[in-house]
Image (cartoon, rainbow, N blue to C red; front, side, top):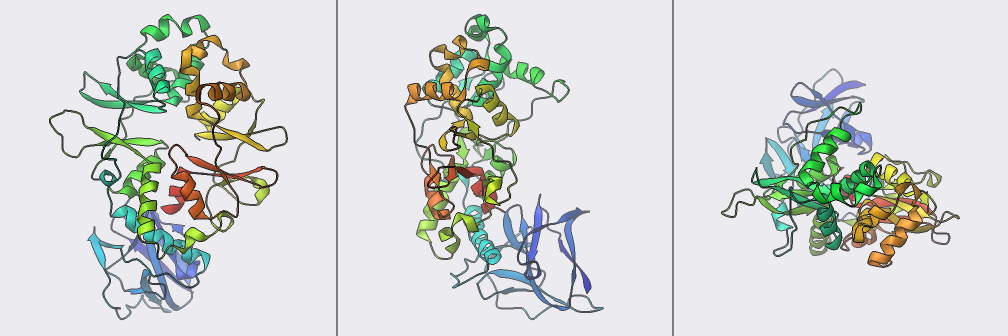
Length: 453
């Protein structure tokens, strides 16, 4: 066996490594000094390998590289006993873009007749990364759209009423003193405000909310829900992207910060003085991506694979599949407070709701809490006495019954992507067909976590 070190010296925030000797499974690389490194014990032989840097497949153009039988570009190394890796004859030139002296893989691989699962996923991610990397968020923003913005001096009560009336789960905040967008008001804010003010029901719908501006609530939230020991924390700068940012960076910004959308600021200020162009969402990026896949369907055979063969989503333990998150469900009779606790603590946007037999009935989302803002319903109830069933009934009265989007383990990835491109759909629940037992859930975040590795 020969101790072989592989390194990526060209920067990046996160780097992983995979090779023909790992079955193309990804292994995280450690940052040693200024470069990412990983070490393997290998028997003598010739191996292929590549790097995944910040969600983009890369190869090191200073090292030998080749195109394999599937059309995928990889680095190549010869491992010999008591010898350093020896360069192989270089194959024909490949098309790439020099970026920080590492070559971004841009050649679209041809459709292979058959692949092992690891290779098929690698080929698929390679193609997806190429599309997302070479398109900016500006190309996803609609040419014409309505964007609501609230002033930080607006009373909280009025702000939440506007959010409900306009069907908004979040809205950017304008600070007139700073002359810019300084934050976001979200459904989570509404939940936290209800928790704090439920201690004084009489004040909830009257003086305090009538006079309490958004800016004061934001400061109070930092004091009340600050550090783990109750200590206040400093407000973090507004997370945003530029209209010139590529779609990989925008998607990773949303995923890593665990937010549902991110403000897009203009790269060049204009005479309006308003830096905000629009909001970027994973659904908008996915819809754009699917349109590109329809234009160039070759090379994406993974789209036709069934979910049971793809490592994606959050699954129930009884399916025998592992997940990074615990799949939670709640019965209709659960207190609404318990549901809100799970949503906030687990940092998820929704929870499947089941009946006494465990069959799916609906999904309660964090944004559904905004239904309580209609006609000041929240001022006439006590959260401790409200069940999930009661909350859903209010939701149905306000917006009518809605479709709960589901699929099966045997559904294809393409079918799931199609459902998630429907406006307003943010997750698909995987059920057992005859019983409607909840087997898993796939969200927009799950899709992009998988696509970007």
